[in-house]
Structures are given as C-alpha cells and as structure tokens.
Length: 331
Image 1 (tube, rainbow, N blue to C red):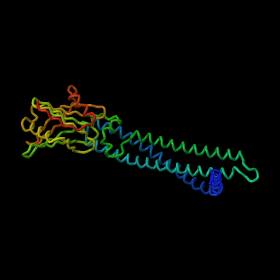
Image 2 (image 1 turned 135 degrees about the vertical axis):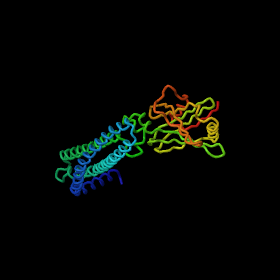
Image 3 (image 1 turned 90 degrees about the vertical axis):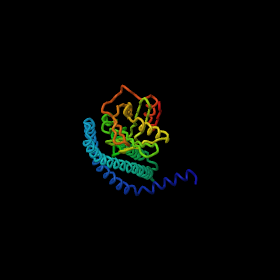
Image 4 (image 1 turned 90 degrees about the horizontal axis):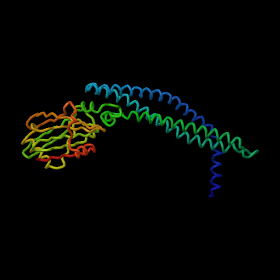
C-alpha cells in the first residue's frame, strides 16, 4: 500500500467514524462532569489536609522544644492519621490526571473525525471556513484541558514536596525532619543514643549495640574513648528506625582489644565523648558511663554540647560519610 493510499484509508475511517462522535461526546461530557464535581471535593479535602498538616508541623516543633517523649508519641500518631488522608487525596488527583490525559486522546480523534466529515461537501468540496472553525475550537479546547491538567499536576507536586512525611518511618527520618525547621539538638536529646557493651565467656569477646530512647534514623554516631593506655573509635550509621542497632566489628582482633581494655582498665580513667552527625550539624557530647554489672556497661550522652573538643579530622570525615568503623590502638 502506498503512502497516499494509506492516508486516504485513514481519512475514510475518520469520515465513517464521525457518526459515533455524538455518542462519544455524551460519554466524555458525563465523565468530565463527574471529574468536575470530584475535583471540587478533592480541592477542598486537599486544602483541609494541607492546613491540618501545617498546624501539626507547628505543634511538632513545640513538642520537640519541650522535649517530652509522651507528647512526641501523641503528635506522631496525629500526623500519621492526617497524612494518610493526604496520600489518598494525592492518589485520587493522580487518577484524575490519567483520565483527563486519556480523554485528550479521545477528543483528538473525535475532532479529526468531525473535521474530516464537515470540511468537505459534495456540492462545494473543501470548506475552508468550516475547517478553520472546527480546527481552531478543537485545538483551543485540547490546549485548555492539557494546561488544566498540568496546573493540577504542578499544584499537587508542590504541596507534596512541602510535606514528604507520610508514614512512621518518615517521622523518624532526621533528614526529613530538618526541612520542617526542627532543631537537631532537640531530636538528639529525645533520641539519647547510648552504647551498650556486653562481655562474657572464657575467650576475649565483646558485643556492642546502640540504643535509643525515641527511635530516629538517618544520622551517624561516633564513640571516642581516649586514655593513657588506649584510643578507641567506634563509628556507626543509623539508617533504619530501630530501638537497638548492632555495631559491626570488621575483625575479631578489635573485639579482643576492647575486651582486653575493659578487663584491665575499664572506663574509669578515660575521656569519653559521643559525636553526632545529622544533616549539616556536628555535635560533641561528653559521655556518661554506667556500670550495669561486671559484664555490661552503658555509655550515654551528657545533656550539654561540648564543642571545645573534637575527634581527629580523619574520623570526623568517616563519620560525615556515614562509614561504619572500629579503630582500637594501644599506646
């Protein structure tokens, strides 16, 4: 089939299909009317959810400032409830956009069909005025609908970018809390991460984990122990919201050295600090040691930031990069 014959065939199909354009118009008009009514509801619900989210963000900032764990738990539950509705509305907007885009294709074919039938007549042949009127109105309508769909998309995307917290994991993510203008020091205070050391058995052995009072994620932590006998650096990256995160030792030798230090010296004559890296914030805290029993120790943060001292720069670089490492060196 030649190209000319192909276009003539397509043109004949468009002319023959013009009889169903009226039916298609009824259906699409009904769909568009439903979308219009639905969009009014969506716009109202969307605005209500955005407003409620804004109020809860302000409330959450106050909760973090007050540093009360019970209030934080309650506001987290409220936030999840509101934002679950926000997700439903956002999904509904997405479905509406897909329907509109599909209708644009139908309207385009219908416009071409009417154009093929009405622009030509047996008596006068090609009618330029009919052609221009039908083409211009069809193009204008399709342009208006496509721009309307784009406006809806831009608006929903903008609001979604403003609020990227939709579930419990997001509420624990420090990287997502920082844009909400929540002070990182308040987050760290509520988290209060602590290192737990457990030693037991005949062979030199130690197990270390990081525990939080309130679970948060996406921050890095460094424990520094310096004494006349040893220098110990333990860096970890808290990527997942867990109450307890195990520290991974790359070698048995590091376990043996830490066990040897605890058995021979303990923490009594050591300078101990905990450094937190979250976002662009780097905070140093003098640590407190609690001896739970002869085999278990707990090292927690002090309440005050101490920026007069800092670990070695190479360890800080590893910390900022989120590297997990254990370094033990006897003097």
